[in-house]
Length: 426
Image (cartoon, rainbow, N blue to C red; front, side, top):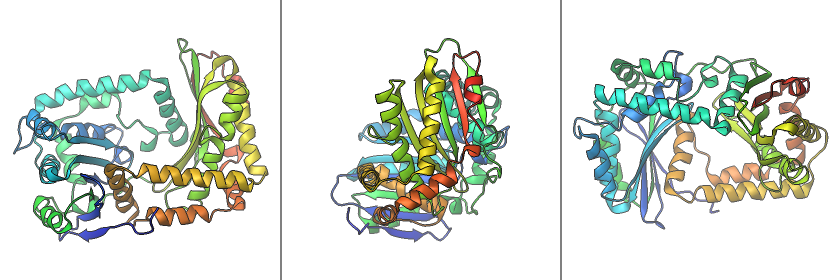
C-alpha cells in the first residue's frame, strides 16, 4: 500500500467539515454525509428514532415531494443510493459514475436539508420497520447479538437495539423527527466525505453552495458508557424450536483511541479471525461443533466489546464454551509465536487493503474517523502501528482483556436448563 493517501481537508464557514479524497484510477465517486448521532444518543422513549429518521429522509422533500422522484432520478443514472444507522453515526450516501456526481450530491443534500416527513408516509414506514424488527428477532444469528449488548451494557442506550422496539416505533410522531433533526443535524455535528474520480476545485465550490443552508450548531454528545461492565455475566433466551444454539462469549473491549487497540485487533484474529484461527481449528475442525465461529474486537468512542460468536450443536454447546474459555486462558498465559503473529499481521493488512478498494469504503473509513475522533490515521499509518505490535503486547492485551472475572455469555437456544453454561463463569 502506498504511503501517500490523497486528502484535502476543509472546514466550511459554518463549521461543516469536508474531506475530499481524489482517486484518478476509477470511474466512480461516492458522496457521503455522516452525522454524529445514532442509537446511543436516544432516550428510552426515543429508542429506534435515529434509524426511523434515516428511513424517513427518503420520503420526499420540498424540491422532490414525491418519493418516487428521488428514487427514479438516481435509478436513471445507475446510482447506488443508501444509508445506515449505527450506535454513534448515521450516514447517507450516493455512489455514481463520475459524470453524475452533481446530481447525486444534490439529492443527498436535498433530503437532509429539505425533507418534509409526510404523515401518511410515517404511518406506512412504521409498518415497514416493525417488520424489520421482527425479521432480525426471528434471525437467531442477529438476535443473539441483541442479547450480547444487553449483557454488556444493560439499560444503557448501547444495550438497546438500533431499530428500537415495536412499542417505541409505533409511538413516534412527526414532531419527534423534526425536533431530533434540530438537535443533531447541523454543521459541527456532521462530515461530508467525497471519494473517487472528481475535480477537487469544482466539488469544493459545489459543497459551498449545497450546504449553505445547513443549520449552524455544535457537536452533540451521547450518554457516557457504563463504568462497570459487563452489566450482566449471563443472559439467555430459550427458543425450543431452534436446531442450533447461538452463543456469544466475550469481555468489555477497548475504545477507538486506546493504545492497545491494534494488539486487541490482532488478538481477535488469532482467536477467531479466519479459517486457520485457533477457535476455528479447535471448535469446528477438531470437534465438529460449529459451522461458524468468529471473534471480533469492536470499538466505540469510550468503550468496546471483544467477543466470539458461534452457532453450535445444542447437545455440545456447553463443551464448546469450555473450549472457548480454555483458548482465552492460553492467550493470557502463553506468548504467541512469531510465525502466528506475522500471519495475523499479514491478514490484517490484506483485509484493510481489500476493504478500501471501493470508493464508498474509503468515504466511510475517513468520514467516521474525522467525525468521531477528530483525526484521520491513514492506512499506511495504521499498518505501521500494527507492525509494531509485539508478542508481548498481544499477551498483555489478553491478560488485561480476557480476565475470567470480566467474561460474559449470551445464549439463545432450546436448552431448558443453562446451569452447565453459568457454572463456567468464575
